[in-house]
Image 1 (cartoon, chains in turn blue, green):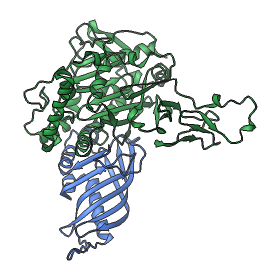
Image 2 (image 1 turned 90 degrees about the vertical axis):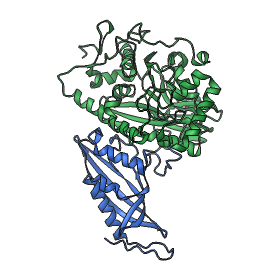
Image 3 (image 1 turned 120 degrees about the horizontal axis):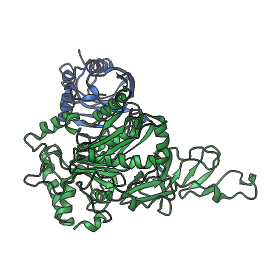
Image 4 (image 1 turned 120 degrees about the vertical axis):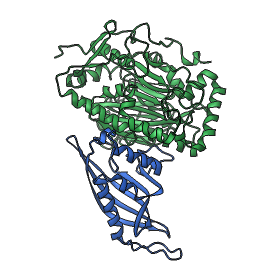
Length: 171
Length: 451
């Protein structure tokens, strides 16, 4: 896979939307297949994963209560938790299907690009079907002919986590 | 039709059982709307949320749409969220600041104190039309204790301070965490649901017994980050200092109860643990010292070192643990509840200190934390299990023959005893098991009792 990324002498990165889509679809596949170690390897060491509250999709986790605010270390523990047999809401794992659309590269610097995309994540378990709908915001950095994730936000359009109850899997 | 009792309560025989029908039957919820939600003090919000005149919050309390607002006269009032004219909802946003609430249907307008201040074509009504009779309808009672605002639909209800009984001491331990004397709800709210009866969340919020088995992954995380830190030790990470005053499970009167203990996680006020970050150690220890300097050794250390899972009967939980969550929940059906949770913090916290608290909250609490999702699963699992039939009674007798520990079930029995008393119309004045339990000084306020 090639990103088409170019970074010569401080100019902004230039990447194709197709390359970004390839990366996002690959990530979605890893999550739908519960290949969580492979998924975690997509992140930089200083990465963050944030899910703001349904009341305030713009919420800043340093100032407001959100749902998830992980640095790389806590993200590691989130993955460890989900891989164990003791994350009870995800053991056995739910079935999920991620549909990612409306992908746009919204900005670029010499080191990173920002991306927005719409998502629908369906989660099926115990006879229930719970949709999670919203928007991703990524900061991606070029790496190994593809990208690594430096920041990942999943902003929900839902008004409440009802009837979902929790964000127990990776959104 | 009820053929079996709701609760079998025989401490002398070590028996305490709850009929599962209390959590499955439509008729039970039908009675609860009046017997429980119609006459008790119910949490509507925190005074800090209404920072300025005209600021309001929309809330569903006891199943009813309400809103509460700080009037131009600085008074906080709660109103039934319905136009006195023809019924439409008046307050249609979750929060905001306004001079006037205008019903969009026929454009009747009300000021922040509820008065009808304008309506189109008023002459069309007869000569006896009285604006005062068409004012917004206030909820029968509203009162606050140290910033916590409660409403009561029963005009004849006992006053709030009497109602809170022994729970005041624990509300004081929460409120006194602000050395500036001002606690505040942090911006943001967690709204979620459970396919379970609301009383299961009462039980779960006070249940020390489930913590280790259900939340093993959380404790693994703590151990992993804390390394050799004293996970599970009684002193909760303050080397050489056993937690003071940890009383275990306590019935606080009127159905209120608390688990008063200590645990291996960090408390932003003020018990340092590695998960709070190495750079926070000095500041956290300073806060602890400041609390002791302000309040004295015992009260200061209780604030800093002990954790509190507090129930204000019937449906307010204040868990003062790795952060402070204020959580209330309302049934929708016997097998479905909606939950709203906020975070409470000392108003003087900002910058890195507030960020640290927010981050620490999320390691365990809320629907994206390392623990709450598994509580949701546990409660939904119980509700599903009830429908299996074959077993009619839940057993909540743990610790009934000893002074209750934090992982006993006295806290839940206190709740159920009051619930049963109200549902069957048989008032009682003691919610403990017997002489062995810790009893808070009945009438003394914590303010009076603290050094």
